[in-house]
Structures are given as structure tokens and as C-alpha cells.
Image (cartoon, rainbow, N blue to C red; front, side, top):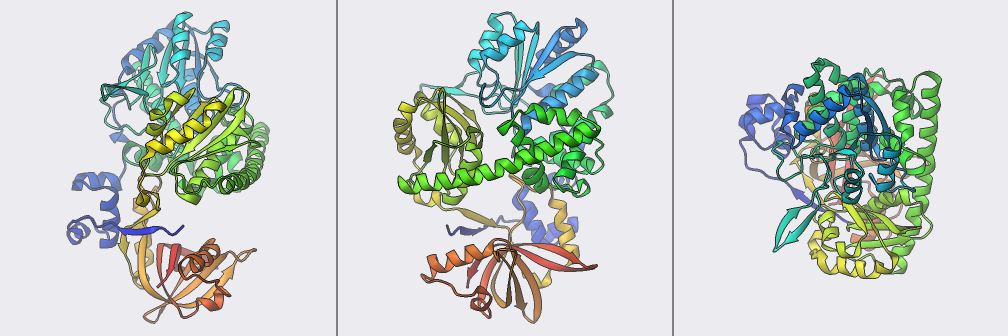
Length: 585
């Protein structure tokens, strides 16, 4: 699908800003596109400082939670942590478990089994805690929607603290939103309406970090001892795809630096198994290499493997790391097969034009629904729900586009659902199979998406002549890192570039290297997986089949979107454009 290119043009004195902070005007445009604010805020963005993390005491119910924890530690009560089975839940448990053990707590943990238990705490987990003599349950990265389980815990005499970061459920009363909170002793979630905490976009592990940092403060444990948890909160922040703004940006910026010297044997073993140089760790490596290995544990085995790995040493660490890596390889193959089935289902029932695509897949592992939903969403640029059949009805995951809040959409159709929860961009749900058709129609009826909403859009930061880019310019761009959600990698554009040479690369010849002649200066660009895109472009826009692209494109002019990089080979460095989109001029 051809995307719509939009250039962002915020009015600002870029020349003045460039002079003040010593960065090129094009980079200043990227900066203002991500951090429109005062000069002080811009300097804070460029120099993230851990000292600017907000006081955990500002979180609603934090004082109650800490009082309960201090009492439980002093009285040697048994505490059980309940996490989620994804990367955020696993990191939350690792951080909280490590910190509470150091604080002298009697503590263990439970992570629900994705297949047997489903998402989050439930009555069975609560009952098991009671049977095991647990006095206090603390949830991490879940619990905000677990009304029944939390009520049951209180009913049978357990204390329970809910810490979460997911959107708070609500009902509409006379057109007004009214929050529905679980009846816990304390509910710590920055997204609560009554919560005055300044930053709302923390992940579950960051909320866990806030809890233990406040506990350390009360116990007089030096703040320096908290720093060892920052890398794991950074991994969760990137892996859970929350906004890389504000506090999250500070945590990830410093976490990435700390990861380069990490001593955790389990993490180092996973990096080795994944053929990753931990000294060159990046948000990309976390998001697309290490993160999927952590998530594969919760999808195909048990997320306890992730927690075990982070506590493991020596041969045990290496063995667990290899097992996680292999699990992820299996997951990748299963996902590819599931995507083929999803495409067949969509074509067979002509769902390509549905405002919200809802697909039921009969023979796909339920843990892969979210990944497949994400791929379908990217392919058709429509909110997508992938459902799989379980013993208790249909269970699925949703992934959305910027123009549609999937959590709100599910909330409007909640009468058809057994359970749901999540974010504007991702959610989970269960429903009875006989309600599927009605649910699909209700979603479609209430979506109200316009035709233009269903066209992917690419926001361009600035037009930039590739011939003027220097290594110093590229190095200056790195000050905007780390890149991720809400702080994307800059996109530059240039028009009417003359293509001098084209080389097809890769085993399957699906990548391209293009050499541009820019006013007599030769600049190289690489376009990974670009061959298919350009062949599709000829069909869709020029209504013909392209021939040999190495000859077809030669001496043509094109418009490109790109990010500049430095390519070093045999000791020689030169500017190389990483092309992200391409059009014949």
C-alpha cells in the first residue's frame, strides 16, 4: 500500500536554535518535531538525567502500598508477586523480587500460564496463594482489570496491592466516564484520574521500580543500590513499546549505557546465543533480537524461564539462553505459517476493506495472535483482531493504527466480550464463539473511520540534500537517540535524485544498493527488501510489470525518504543513506 508523505513544519526560529545549541538546522527541525518546548526542556531532552526522575511518592496509593510492605517485612509475612507473561511482566518480577529480597522480605512469585491461566491474576492464582500461606499479593503489569480476582482475594482474607500501567477500565454514566478500579488495598497506576504523578506513560517494570525505590528510601537503603535495576527497566520499556519520552527516555538512555557493562550472566548468555555484541546494544537489538526471545518464553513455554535466566549463572545461564533462543526460532517459523493462514482467511472472506479486520484462525497457537495481528495491521493498515479457539471460547489480541483507539473500540463493544484490557494501540480479549459475528458487525458499525484514516502516513522531518551530509552531521543526529515509539528515528526526504547505478544484493536479490549522482557527487543508498516494494510500485502506479531493476532504474530520477548513516568497510568510512521509501519522480 502506497503511503502518504507529509512534511512536518512547526514554525520556529531554527537558525537561532542552531546557533544556541550548536546543531545543524535540519537536526533542530527533528528536535522540535519531538520536543517542542522551552530551551530548558530542549536541553533536558538532549541531556537526559536520572536526577530528573519524578518522586515515587506522587503516585496515588504509594503511601498505602509502602506502609503495607514495611509491615509485611517487619512481621515476616509471606509476600507473593504476580506478574504478566511478557517481557514487561518478567522484568517487573525480576526487579521487584531482587529488591524485596535485599530488603529482607519473605517473597516468591507467580506468573500465569498463557494457555492454562490466561492474562493476569485470577481466582485460581489467588486461591493457591491462600493455600500456600501467603499474606500479601502484589501484582505487576496486570491487575487493573481483574475485578473478580481482586475481590476474591479480599474476601478470603488476603491483602492485595495492584501495580499496573494499563488503561483503567471505565463505564459511561450519562455520557461521563467513570473509572472502575479493582477493590484492592492499594492501586498504584499513573493512569488513574486521581493520580497527580506527572508522567503517565511508564511501563509495568517502571512502576515496579518506583515501588521499590520508595521502599528503599523508607528503609534507608542507599539510592545507588537502585541503579542496578535501571537496565532491566530499560529493556521492559523498549520491549513493551511505550513512549520513549520524558522519564522513559531518561531510563532507556541510561539503561542502554549500563547494559554495555552489564554483569548479569543470564543476559550476557542470551546476547551470546543471539550473536549480539552487548557493547553495541540499541533499542533495535532489544526490540527485534533479545526482546522476542524473552517473549517467546511466555508464548511457547513459561515466562518463568526469563526470570530464571536473569538469576542464573554459569552453565545454567548458557543452557537457558540457548533454550530461549531456540524457542524464538520456533516461534518465528510458526508465526510465518500463521500469517499465511491469516492472508487466506482475509482473501477468502473479502475482509481487506473492513474498517476493523477481525480474523478467526483455527489452527494457530493462541500465543501468536498478537504478532500476527500486528503483521496484518501493517499489511492492510487497518485495526486488526486475531482470534484463536480455546476450550473456553475465543481468545485473541488486537493491534491498531494511530487513528483508532482499540481499547476504546473494545469498550464500546464490551457487551459481546467476556473480558478485555489493554492500550489504545494493543489489547487482549476473550468472547464466546457464538457472539463473533455480532461482535464483528458492532465494531464495524461503531468504528467511524474515514477513508483517509486508512491510508498509512509517513511524517518527514526535513528535506535534506544527501551531498551535504558529513560524518559530523550523522554523529550529531545520535544525540536524539534512543529512538522508539513517540521518539522515532528522523526521516529526511530528497526529490529528483538521478540514479547512476543499481545493484541487487542478498541471497534472494531482494535488497538494493543505489548510487545517486547529486550534482556530480556520488552518494550510495541501501534499500533493504526494496525490490518487492519497487516492483509493486510499478504495478500499482505505472500499471506495468518492471523488467530487470538494475537496468530499468538506471538514469531514472526518484524521490526518496531516508536516514543517513556511516558505513565502515576495511577501515574506510563513508556516508550511506538507509532508504525507507522510494518513488519514481
